[in-house]
Amino acid sequence: MLTDRYGLALDTGSAAARDAYLAGCERLLSMYPGAEALFDSAIAEDPGFGLARIARARAFQMAEDAAATRAALDAAGTTLSPRAASQARVFRLMLDGAPQAALAAVRAHLAEWPCDALVLSTTANQTGLIGLSGLPGREQDLADLLDGLAPHYGEDWWFAAHHGMALSEVGEVARARPILEASYAAHPRNGYIAHSIGHLHYETGDHEGAIAFLRGWLPGYPRAGRLHGHLHWHLALSELQAGNAAEGFRLYAEAFAAEEYHAPARLKLTDGAAFLWRAELAGHPRDPDRWRALHAFAQAVAPRPGMPLADWHVVLTQAVLGDGEGLAARAEAMAAMTAAGRYPAGPAITALGRAFAAMERQEFDVAIEAIAPIMAERARIGGSRAQVDLVEATLLKAYLGAGRLAEMRALLAARRPAAAALPV
Image 1 (cartoon, helix red, strand yellow):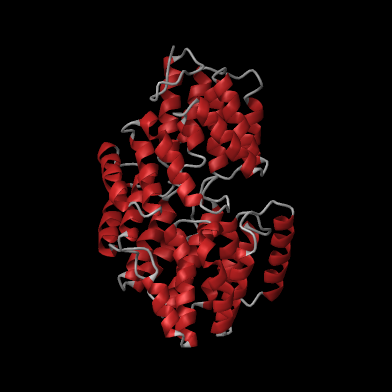
Image 2: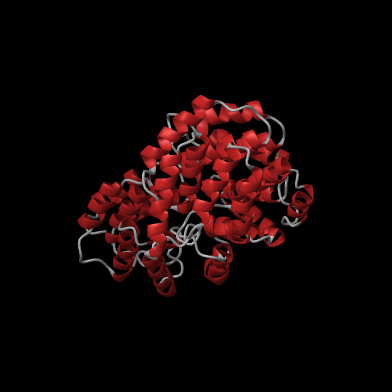
C-alpha cells in the first residue's frame, strides 16, 4: 500500500501518480506555484486517484476559483475512499459559504486522520476557518488545536511553521522561536515559514531583523507564489516602522498593490488599505489617487459583506472616500447577517466604520467612543496581530488628536509585552 509522507494510505497503486501527488501537495502547502499541474499529472497516471482529484479541487479553491473548484469536486465522483470523501465534504461546505459547518467537519476529520495536512491547512493559519470565524478566543483556539495535534506531527517542517506562528500570536514567543527555527532549518523554501518568521520579528519589535530576513529570503520566491504580495507587505510595514516610508511605498506599487497579483484579491485589498492608513497615521501625506483606486477595487472584490477581515478594510476605504452611502449599506447588511446568526463578528465592523469616518472628520472623541468598546474583543474582526494593530494605532491617534494623553498612556502601557511600536 502506498502512503503519503505522514504515513496515510493513498487510494492509488501507481508510484508515478503518488510522486506527482506528493510533489503537488508540497507546493500547495508551502505556497509555491505549480500544484495544479502536478495533480493533473497524478490523475493522468491514475484517473481513479480520488485524493489527487480532491487535492486539485483544493488548489482551485485556494486560488478563489469557485467554478473550477466545484467542477473538480464533481469530477471526483462519489465512489471515493472514506478519507477523500471526508475531504470533499470539508471543501464543499467551504465552497457553499458554511464556514462554521466546515470547521466542525474539519475537527471531525482530524479526529480520524490527525495528520491530514491538506484538511488541517484550511484552519492552520490566521486566515483559516478559526482565524476568520469572528468568534471570541479564536487565537487561543487555534493555538490549542495545534498544541493538541503536535504529538502526531513530531518535527514536521510544515506543521511547525504554523504551530510556531500560532504560539507567537498568543504571546508565547519563547516557545515559538525554537519551533520556527527548526522548521526553517528543515525546509527554508516554504512560504509559510517566511511568513511566520516575519511575524515573530514583528511580535518582538525587531524591524531591522525583519527587513534583513525578508530581503534575503524574497528574491528566491516566485512572483506567482500566493504569499509574494503579502510578504512584501510585511517588509513594507517593517520599512515604515524603521522610518523608510519611500521604500514601503515602492513595495506597495510594485508588489502588494501591483496590477500583476497572484494571490486572492481580498488579500490585496486588506494589505493595500492597511499600509496606506498606517502610513498616514505615521504622518505621511495622502495620495488620493491611490485611495480612489483602492475604493473601486474594494467594491469590485467585496461588494457584499461576509468575511470580517475584508469587511473592515472595505469600510476603511469607504470612510476615506467619504462614501457614506456605502458605509450605511454595508452596516445594514452586516446587521441583518448578525441577526440571522451568519456574522459572528457582530457589530464590531460597523463600529470601526463609524470610527474611521469620524477620524476623517477629525472628530476624535467620536472615534474613541466607537473604538474603545470593541478593543477587548478586537481579535474577532479577523487577521493577525500585525493586522489588528491598525485598530490600536487608530485609537492612539484619536487619543492624541483629542488631547486625551492620560488615556493614550494607559493604552500604551496595556499593550502586550515587546509589541511592535505603533508609528503614529
